[in-house]
Length: 230
Image 1: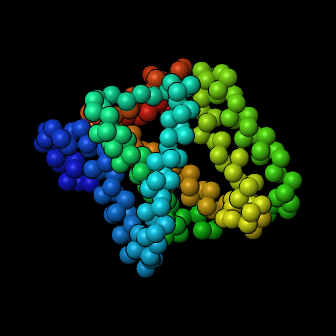
Image 2 (image 1 turned 180 degrees about the vertical axis):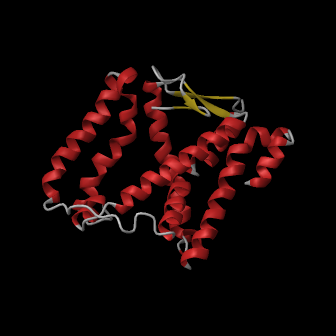
């Protein structure tokens, strides 16, 4: 990660084009090592199968938002390779960092006990929230497609509302189930990890030549690095 930054500042051409993955993959490995040092276990060390399964899932996950962006037109890529195979290989290498980066960062925050004492009133009957969550998810899905210039931020909350009732119903790991136990620690950890990763994404994207550029309506002029402040 630091080496990539040094090579970037040295003006090495290939690094200037591929800086984003050259920064992200070392970050993921370093954070995994820090988690292992702190907890004695880590995603890559003790759950390698799950870690490597995250990579194609991460690519597919981000491609969903790329499909939304066909309608939203909130960002586009510049200085990408003209060769289509090289271009999509680059996309895959970069998109594959999204979920591992997020979950590794969340694991690091968890290892240091962030939000460990957070408590709130337990959710008494989670099943009555199934329908409101599903309706909210559908609204979040439809409004950006119908009026993208006004409701584009809602796409980032679609899957929370659509999948959470399903996860709870199937007995999978669920934010609702945690809420029933009087905590939303995982939710807080995910939000914080997302904010941290978001800053890294935008910081590293700012310096690379092959990058995404935002075309967000109304607030595109107010930015942190390349990212508009919503």
